[in-house]
Image 1 (cartoon, rainbow, N blue to C red):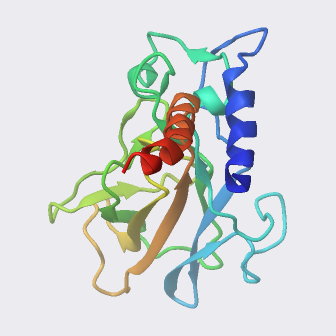
Image 2 (tube, rainbow, N blue to C red):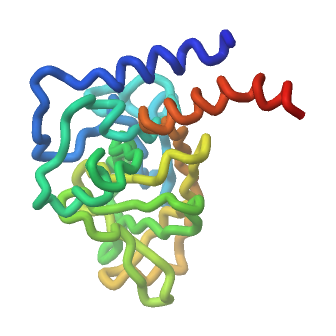
Length: 228
């Protein structure tokens, strides 16, 4: 039973609602910021992450990379909820779907050289784990849209941006595969620069009710085994 002890602690903590439950006006980060650095150096685009020795030190440089967790609000903010009029309410509120989510991954530009005239940083979505979605947090609309070649793309706007990733907390891990490329105003990729693939990883933490259900099932296993 030792492996279940940490889960029992998490479950008991999460099931204790905060005395002063709050209505949250924004989607929380769910932890410290973790950065994806979009770089342009020596005439080519590149992707770096926190902890990479090539990332310049400063306020946007953090400790070595840790895999962000997708957490339901019921676990990260016990007793709190979202405004029912918020566009993300039905997906993230504990009284609705209560999906696990994270906004820790954030895109930042650290270009050593100016980008070629008429081109910008674009990110193409290659693959998402089943159930994982990525949204523009403030509007709760899909972050990626069909580009000139019908692939799903998003243009980096120039300032730090943290999209919202969310999914049912039913599996242990999720991932999202992308590629960075240089493109024109429409998102058409320049043939003069190679695209740079990269992958973002997540671990999923179940909501307290699901933890309780799993613990109950685990407690029944010895009884079921004796009746076989």
